[in-house]
Length: 148
Image (cartoon, rainbow, N blue to C red; front, side, top):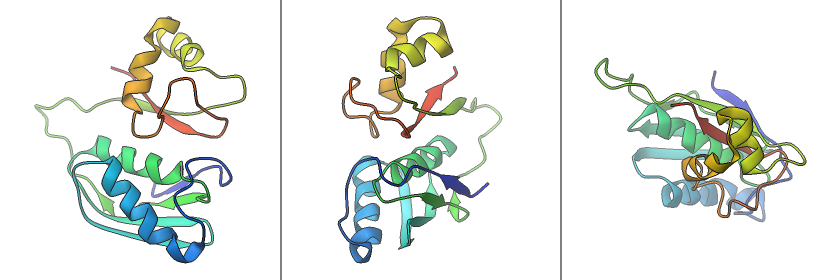
């Protein structure tokens, strides 16, 4: 459950050489998320290994998607990226991971999952740390689809 595949040649560019990758991925995660602590990142030949503590399971998923949607990252290993178990009185946020394919739009994805293209903002807001503009998504990008 700790290895996640991504498309290596697409995504946001945050490093130019493998030697700067780990530090830049870590910095990118720290900027894009809140609630990560003890964060450590290693990078080797397209594989980003992220370790640390997340305040929620949803933040863990978010951190994996952010790291995986960086250009040059082909796999994310997150075995030691820990999140607490949800408390029984707190409902667990349900989401599905979706890989964007050629021809997709957020409206089309919203129609597929929610029955209405006008609900695309729900997807955009759930992925605001990954998608900077709802009109700029690309094949191979992985996003979260909130199911609540």
